[in-house]
Image 1 (tube, one colour):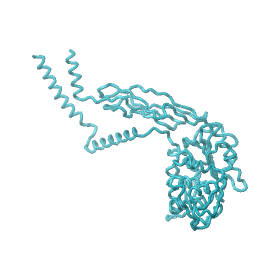
Image 2 (cartoon, rainbow, N blue to C red):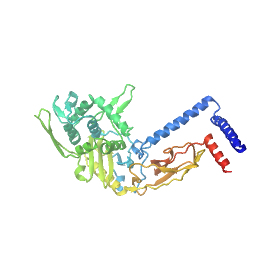
Image 3 (cartoon, helix red, strand yellow):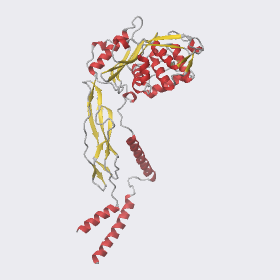
Image 4 (cartoon, rainbow, N blue to C red):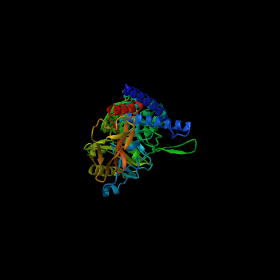
Length: 453
């Protein structure tokens, strides 16, 4: 009886003691004021919200096109052939259609007029926002556009789908205006939508003022002057979007690969015939899409997408000669395509990482097992690389974490770095829930030890 009363007394004493300990333990003595304590609580909540958002985010490779370091994220130069040292274009770029990474560039971030390569944006916006049978009418502004033009009389009506062939095969300037007015109500409003789409794609040095790419400037109320133009890199990004990312990419590719298209206006009285002026379609195999351009200020311009052995290369040229050097662009494209095909191939750089369990401070369990969270693609990571590219894997995990820990909590991450830049990050998550020790846990441990004696 004496032993039983002793146990009850011990239990009561431990209960009271841990109740007092719990009250003191709830006070954060590192906070010297209520305001500071509130700030700490706010920081903690922010961290929790950030971690929750991070956990909900899908794993995805870094898109160099939308990275702040996009333009700087160039591949280390493989051995540069003489043909690339002698490119005729004032600006040129070759990018990986998968990641948007620059594989080769020459003045690729310099702003220049882009001429009718503008029309790839006009086309993709019309495909995404319009309907094939939408009616487009020749307005006064459209009929006043200079050559090259469809030449239909004011008031003539067409189907939008037919005009997209006119736009991309023959590069008709009046057609671009008809499409812009049908989609957005005016050229000015359509230009706003073009610029908005460009920003979404990742372009920060692109300015659209017209849907057809004619040389254009506009003076703003503050006296600043806007010029219609882009960079070779950003023009390549727009083509990349058109052929690999847009929900209308298949239709875009179909239109731009078509050699000939005939159509009539809605009255059926007038017939029009279009032929594709993208000679690269018949000069090279694997050409997905392309668009030529020329104005007096821009010179010859060109943008293309080329497929080769499962790889997609995007090439953009600005200022690729002036008359009579119309063919300079084709030799430049061949040189860039050959460089990509000869030097860049896909490699699986996946490394199996099995992290050790992490120690849990103040947890009812001393540690928790952790695991790498992969995506649907499973345990593989294929990158387009040259022999000069360097891939590293870094694991960032703490030595210990504070309880409580929930199964699925992000503990750290495993990063894949390409030439020093993080290109993919996999979260490392707790596999087991570990509760925090409380007075009941301490009471149980004490009783178990006491009863065991």
